[in-house]
Amino acid sequence: MFGRTPAADAEFMMRDTTSHPPAYAPAYKTSVLRSPRNALISLQHSLSEVTAPVFGASELGPVDNDLIKSCAKSGLPVGERLIVHGFVRDQFGRPVKNALVEVWQANASGRYRHKKDQYIGALDPNFGGCGRMLTDENGHYFYRTIKPGPYPWRNRVNDWRPAHIHYAISGEGWVQRLVTQMYFEGDPLIATCPILRSVPSDEQIRGLIAQQDPGAFVQLDSRAYRFDIVLRGHRATLFENHVQGAAE
Amino acid sequence: MNVLRETASQTAGPYVHIGLAPQQAGFEIFGNNFGNVLVTPQTQGERIRIEGTVIDGSGTLLRDVLVEIWQANAQGKYNHPGDRQPGKAVDPTFRGWGRACSDFDTGLYSFETIKPGPVTGRDGRIMAPHVNFWIVARGINVGLNTRMYFSDEAQANAADPVINLIEWEVRRKTLIAKREDRAGKVVYRFDIRLQGDDETVFFDI
Image (cartoon, rainbow over all chains, first blue to last red; front, side, top):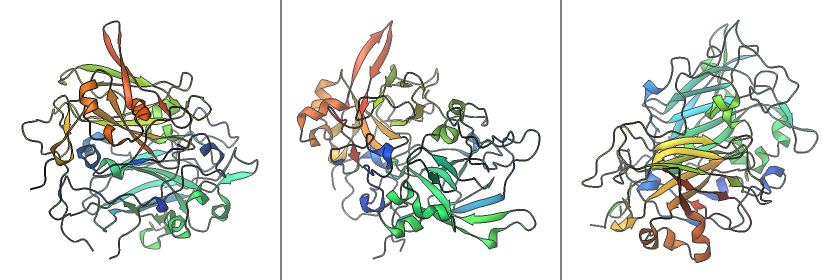
């Protein structure tokens, strides 16, 4: 499936909009006034779209991917200890190396460490709720955290978010930039979440649900979940790379 | 042939700051924070500030939006191995990427950067100087992409292959940031309207 290796300035697959929620998804009420009404203008890729920032390991700290340790002050954070890991690949299955993966989440009570979160769930003095890492040569990433709790939110009066971890991923090209959320296998709130249900197909919803991964458990310590991410495919085109010059 | 589907996008939500700008969420955790200052004293190019607001369909400012920019350096070269434009050098002090959040009170976002040079576009056509924007927030299901161009580049803008793709000429002005001189400092004002009158042109890239 890999085929030829794409050049560093190769174009990417055009976005399949049926893989994503529509901008206007009225069951998620905030989207109503924040969704463009005009059609997006489709661009063939230039250097502006196929390039992207490159990040270095020296920019990250040694415990940036350990949410159990990175904010621990008087002890360990409360909650179920988890390892989350997976592979970042493109649509052709190629590993996306050196991708920046940033994650953030609520604590075990469903409370965010954020000055605008007023939920009654208790803050945990030993938990910050954010982490970041770079994928390795195989596109693999991993971090350690505690399982986030579900929480109520103002949409309808009894809407609850399933437990989830937010992701932002920066890959090889600006067009691969993606934000998403990871959910947990077996959570009964998955069936009714208006944000998750804005995704238009069951197949794509399944892709956002992490599976428990016993092979990666740490014995007598932590469970593990596996969550793989697919970014836009880097094309290996023939005779037609016009991105930064005339066709030859 | 089997091609995988891109992972579905989900909103960044109201607490995006925790992950991407924890100082704005109200705490210190990382030794090194990604932010809105793209330049060092050594960076080549004209110093500029880009600032603006993001506005919803009712005219209300978004106070919880996160904006990222990606741009070429003063010579019009991206700091990326894919950029092979001849005769242009990478500026090692300039990555060309920044991240800003709107202020919780004023709704204003800002970047301290340099004005980019023109970049060669498809088929050798020169693109006018521009800055690529990516916008995420609560209520935005898929990150929005747009470009900011410069009001003092009217001639280059008129020849820009991307601006000229916009069939509705009245909408082109939504991509042009207005240059202001503010006590000797160059500021470009770029307000982004998500919906309604003068809705900003967004791109499917």
